[in-house]
Image (cartoon, rainbow over all chains, first blue to last red; front, side, top):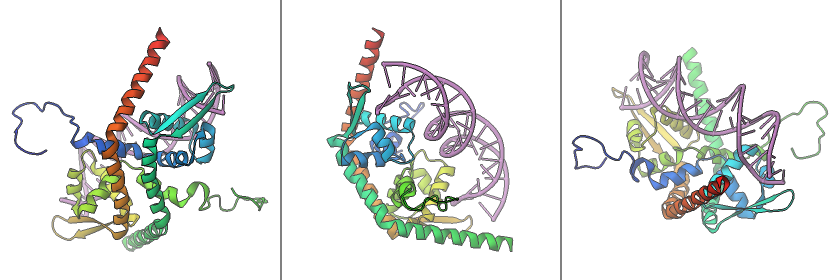
Length: 139
Length: 139
DNA sequence: CTGTATCCAAAATGATACTG
DNA sequence: CAGTATCATTTTGGATACAG
């Protein structure tokens, strides 16, 4: 990358904050998860219990939900509070930081709703085109 | 899902536009890809050739880039143009539809840049906390 | 240059069982 | 209720070779 320094012999620190492990990537990669956006949007609506989230987000397994929540908590985007009831009660809620992200994520959701038809139309057109090509190839 | 129609014998269309395969999900899932956002942002800057993208997006393999581009093309977010030169030249560019999404995605990137420090601080705090708990457990 | 096909290793996930 | 641990399976990804 860049210039100068022909790097005489060894390439010293292979990983710098720049290039691959750029900060933006770290966050983008976190968002690159099927469930993160859904969870964030859910919790932006209000606090939720574990199984409440599980039921509210169709298709997520207990294991994956658990893992994802833990990551989001580590990132400071959500907070986990456990109440010493019996059986234990756990409530997840969004943090101020998480809320700012949720707003951006919601813009994504709004885009999806607004343009889903265009996307599906494009898919149909593409698939038809591919089908036509396949036909020509066999002809 | 839903109600009415006890479905005497066979469960007709198991997948409705609602619930799990909701339109928003389809798009959100597409975004849930390590590379999609990076590609979109790149192409929003201007048209790029295949290997140009490959080099510009560190860490992406030829195979994955190829797959991802094909999906984005199918979704109508980017366009692929091949020029019959020798060897062949291929140029990818963003569509108007893709551009509207790219703008939203860029908001995400801006969020990442703006809050990466807060996220990393949260991670450090969380990890320290976990470390402390582990120590107590062994003590 | 721009891919596709194949093989293989690595990572993610679901199901299940079990704990506090 | 809210998880964790483990195992089998599926999915995904990288490396390589090769084609138009």
